[in-house]
Image (cartoon, rainbow, N blue to C red; front, top):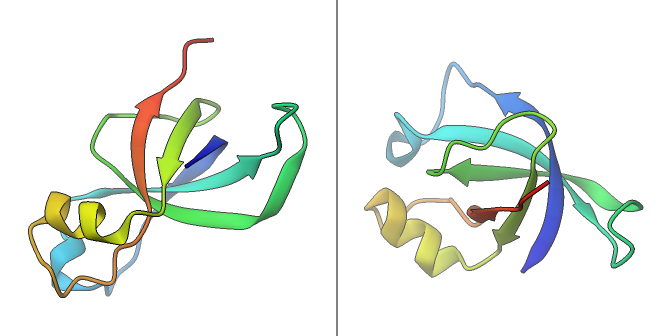
Length: 86
């Protein structure tokens, strides 16, 4: 599990059928200090309604993400667990 900052949303003209109708976000993981970014942006499936600039908790639990989208063959790995208070 990571805390990250939402950079914005993503869209695709062609994507796996299991991802149809799901909001996709680009999230930068943050280090323990809560300010320093770590690594490359992560594509995350969002069912909670996070928006640009929000701090979110994300997980790489692929099984949970695939259960959420309802397709165990989905390539989805990352999902939003929660939106952090400001």
